[in-house]
Image (cartoon, rainbow, N blue to C red; front, top):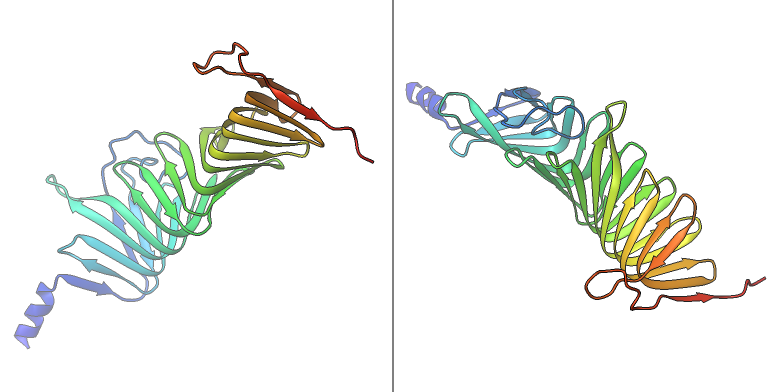
Length: 283
């Protein structure tokens, strides 16, 4: 009996059944930033709270906590939901622990009051403050804007940007922007809520509005002004008219388009000619 109790006390793996609550305190060197999906850098010195329905397994040797069954992690107004959460920590020389990585698997949802992201799996690097969410369909939302991808979505807390990879699609006020990769730059609006203000697109760019279909190798879309700048292999299709060139600026609010040329060193000298086909209106 005594040996059994001793073995139990020395066990390096503990399983807490039913609903379990674990709170970590860890040091973040970055300055606190409120709002967004800033789970790593958003609330300096605040605890992270982990709960689970089925239990939390503590692998002491590996310094891992595994929460399963409607697992939830929250900190500073940001919440992570998943079927399974794995929290990786290390002991500090001054005492206490540092949580340096959080993995999520199964129906992952990360959200705050201003932004949200969904996918199948996720990895949050607390030291780099970078969140990566994978899945066949990953969805990011900020205010009225939605960005999806079928490979991966990255959220860079300190750089204030989200990057969508793999058939990325952004929808903004009825306008659709598609590309292999989309990068959304974020800022706080007057009410303190996160919003997308610039979208950069790379490779196989297609922009669809109620008037135009625009194609190029890359593009920068400024949401405030409605102006999109297209670069390389530009094609503008409006009704039955087609314009081709090297560089274009289109105001998606007014419909005004400027088709320009760029020479091999990047200056606007007009060495290459733009080309347009205007077809008669068909009844």
